[in-house]
Image (cartoon, rainbow, N blue to C red):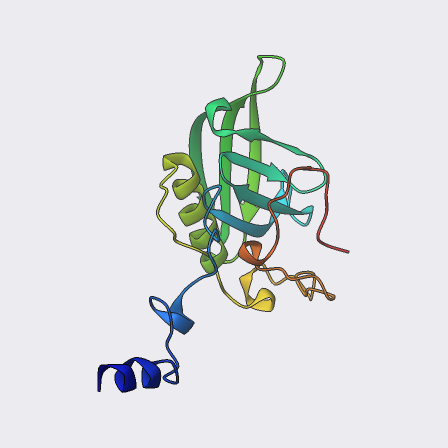
Length: 167
């Protein structure tokens, strides 16, 4: 009887842990990851801001690590959101970067990611929206994947800030 139960249990499909609800192992290693299509320093100057672990950067240009961050200032003018990031550059000088958003949802998502980055909460709070709906601005198709997975959790960590994912 015990042999029969042991033998029949091999034919019952089983899933480990939560099965289909589980993220692949290692998905959240390296801290939170997200990207945000913004305007950099002036309206209509498009850029993609990325957060990954302790780094925040503008794709194809450069960025900072969490320990270089000094402070944040926010202003709203009409329907535009101005996000000023004060930091110390590699030469030890104080600098300010400006990220603008015209969409309230885009601003909200950016702030959520920024605060997560600033606090460095290790909790898995992924940004797993569909690629075409993830960008904070009306990106006119800029965030379509063109065969490259845009979900930052489905891509290997970016080690070169000069790498661009937009055409």
